[in-house]
Amino acid sequence: MIWLSVVGFLVAAVAAGLIVRWGREHAAVYGDNMPQRFHLGHVPRLGGAALVLGTAVGWALGVLQSAHWGDPGSLRLDYWVVGWLLVVLPAAVGGIAEDLTQRLSVRYRLTLTGVSGALAVGLSGLSLPRMGLPWLDAVLAAAPWLGLAIVVLAVAGLPHAFNIIDGYNGLAGMVALIVCLALAHVALQVGDRALAALLVSTAAATGGFLVWNYPRGMLFAGDGGAYVWGVVIAMASISLVQRNADVSPWFPMLLLIYPVWETVFSIYRKAVRGVSPGVADALHFHQLIYRRIVRGVFHDDESRRVLMRNNRTSPYLWGFTLLTVVPAVLFWNNTPLLMAFCGLFVVSYVMAYLAIVRFKVPNWLRH
Image (cartoon, one colour):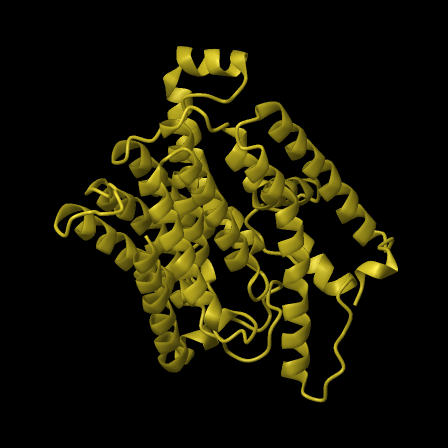
């Protein structure tokens, strides 16, 4: 497992470096007037391509190790991993195409992630067998198609949730890395080494990308990177629950409550204003932290000043993520506690959002 991760990290890091060196002509496509733009200059948004390559190489080597080279670590990575790669492919291609052209509408991208969701059901046989509550479990048992629909919704929706929180250097990438490692930890706790190997390899490839993304901001993940993270993490979360009865289905929910609730809350506040959910704005939680908590950096060079302020924003959200990841990892088999922490996060998020909007943030939170 370790050497697969090392290879995945190196492949992603080298590929990302080549993109930084040769991909700047594609960066100019991203307009200066976009509301979610918080950087100066032209930065390539093709980090997703490096992430796909590093992840695919790590997974493929794991399959070869299991099938042809012997498997001393008993990873049991079989050719079903190819099915996972095929599931990731439509979403990744759609995201990278959008990063290259900026012309792929939200409708088409949703369709492609929906195709990935359908393939997760058809090729990988994913389904949600239980929800952790007796009456919901009875409903799923009576109508198994609901479990399949939830899988399609999760695989299709989580990539866009990661895309929403992908606003500053190291933000979405570090959240994805933390979540992957948390899922891998619990997978190892229940003896699911194959799933843990896929997750650790994905985390390693994410680390290779982060070498160029944080703190220097020389490469962005783009839609392609967010979609890869979303599809892989959604599949791993559902698979962990499906294959291991001891794991509460609310464990991955608490792990992912930040990007999921950010998406739900964004849809709500846009609906209240009569705005389409697909319209980009600058009112997400991380953007408010950038504008109203992280103070300006005094530096003579404007681009350097923007970069330093950008980099100061992400650690706030890393800490916010750890507030849910730590209890999720500690109580991964305790459904009532996990549900309570999910509710606590939702209440805390709304209170924090309103406090920032109303300029009632304590001074100790500001730089």
